[in-house]
Length: 302
Length: 281
Image (cartoon, rainbow over all chains, first blue to last red):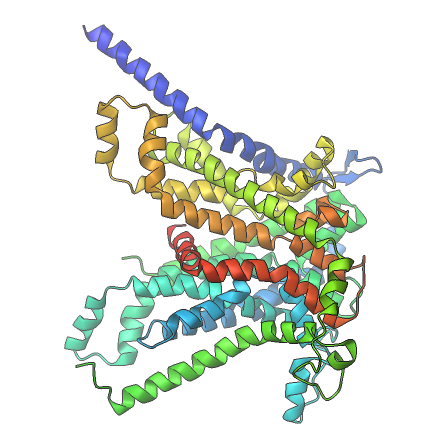
């Protein structure tokens, strides 16, 4: 009796396991071939030099030694961080402000939301073309508007001092809609009863904002921060489209991923490119880890 | 209460509208300027001081842009790419997400940690090996090459696992008593419940594929094998340096309008989907 029940159970378990493995199989096989093995392969390639016929020769840490003395790489790292600092704090603050305003009782909220979201559904390639035109030194709309204020606008995308700022502005512009939606969802999840309780206690507007809204919104804010910072550290599209290869400002706008792309697919040095991308991975890991450490100080999970 | 607005409230509402309008103008003006420029002649577009509206609408710019790039191919490739990626993401991710959430099986945690690793690593780390795979398959410069990196979705697996974990056990227990196997539970009970998550994942996948720039540029060279976004890049890139901004803006408009229209029609779904992917993940 006991034995047959056990047998039944084992049979059931085996069928359960079989279904489970069958169901995860496509994802796991794909993940292994397209992602997990490539991580190992890229790490291996970062210790190789690429030969002429697609063969790779083991070089030891030579690529990493080369990175240490590569001025272009140093500048690209600096540009990447600078771009992140230029675009994230301002971008997140503007998104928060927009979400906050859209969370109040006013008419036309749906229309505002639609308009703020338009850049999110537009391909960066098209956005970059439009902005490049707006930024045009002689015929661009921006310098035209500035001329009314008596300001002679710079060559936004060609002047090395302005080019990275110009790209950061486009990046902020195109990400507000996405961040705003996530923050708005966070705001709408805050129970109204908290505010009513605070009203009874006679709390002022600022007090309510800093002791109810911000703490309860902090998980959403943290998510937006982590995602945006990762995105900024991997910036490629806008630099590729707005700066391009022949731009005099390229030295000051070239990001790490752009440099990786040039090394891997324009020059064809896949070994060195791999070591750049491993370096980028290390940076992203460090920054994200740092954010998770800091988050204990300000993110409030209820 | 609430019906009669105090003076202070009215002023507040006005300020809020003013700030939001300023922001909205900043969001929309680039698009309007794109359309206005696309209808100007070269002479009008480069006139100082600027003229806002074109004198005569020059639709010719659109036919010039249409000739500069094989837009029909680009549209077709983009649609194929998006549909293939959506199908793969929805089918494979919902299967794996269900198994990870509702079935206990040996080595589950190890398999799931691989999913998490994929999500944490910057995607550029996969690019060279993925390129080498496409090269080995002999698929360079082909439409199917576009789809390759999106065949499976770690993000989708994670998202749907989160959803399936939240489904109450009672639903499943009843069907186990009825003798349903795991596949039937997944197919008949779980999938219909997951509708809104599946739509969210579909929208997210489509947007991602739509905006992708680097991968198509890496694997495909022929203009007629690119997507809208990457083909557009060639219009200003090293291949065809068109300097007539009216034509460029016409090209940009041809490439943005489909998604704008789709978004405006299904905007509620889009916004809900983005909010869902943001809060669940």
